[in-house]
Image (cartoon, rainbow, N blue to C red; front, side):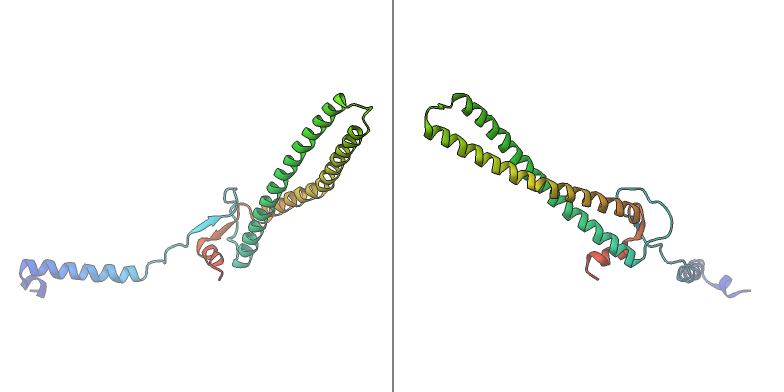
Length: 169
């Protein structure tokens, strides 16, 4: 007769449960560690391929921040140019209207109109001087976005690496 059969039925159940618990505990010690969580950069779906290294992820995160800054600057400049263009258009309309009612026999009225026209011309010159740099700024932003799309968009990374980079590690 074995030791287990000699035990009271309740004690037998406890012995079986304890043995089962030890087996499960030992099995869980040898279980695989949890799979690290992954993320994907940009708006694209995960393209597969290898997971980015910490250095690659750091470069992509920095590039993404540069794009955001450039995008904000471009929007501000565009809003200012739009406002200036509206001022130029309203100034042109005012000059056209003023020309129709100008008393050409009055020397002071003509000089005042010429001064308004010269101020309007300076406004136009300033606007045109800012348009070329703005266009270059837009082209640089488009190039930066294209480079990001090629190197980073849709690339997989480990979320723990991303958190470390954001934390400054």
